[in-house]
Length: 238
Image 1 (tube, rainbow, N blue to C red):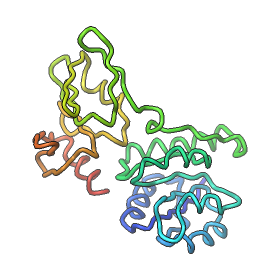
Image 2: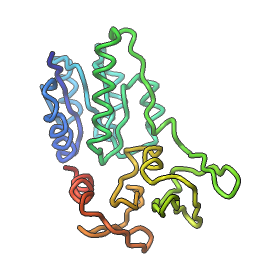
Image 3: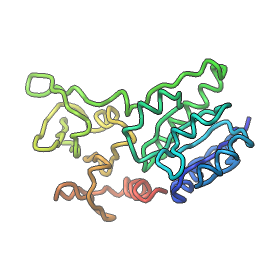
């Protein structure tokens, strides 16, 4: 079965990124796309897509206003640079909430969620499942014979040191016994990226980068050869 997708975003680059991501799934076709919300509203009503990728901050009509304007709503995945609209989006029964820049790994999860609901539930029974963004705002870290509550937003980067990881926060460092791979799996995949076998960094804390290193608060962290292509692609929206 083929599913029709419509993409609405006032940034042409963002349209291209989502369309490129979708091109890797043979069961999806882009039936329409637009950078103009008012134009898109009429096209969406006419085309009746199965899945709508929707930006929030747009001129004339916001994404949330547009959702309320559609009577026969398709499944909706919000794509935005603004995290603060997540709760409001889920109150409008969106399927998922992707934060730009959208890693392909995180995009796959959103597509899997759509396919799973299409296969296992009738449309009337579909209910949204909040993503990691809503569920995980902090981690509980065992260190120094106690459990420390660490806000994910405060993590700058993580370094693997033998059988431990060093979690570098604003003004604090914590050591805990685990592997960097296991720790990386606990982090929201849309907010962190692995750049080296020994380093994971918070995407929004990156101040500068080259093909060889990443700069976070004057610290230069190396980019491993096997991670370079994926990292550069993520940062440049490929």
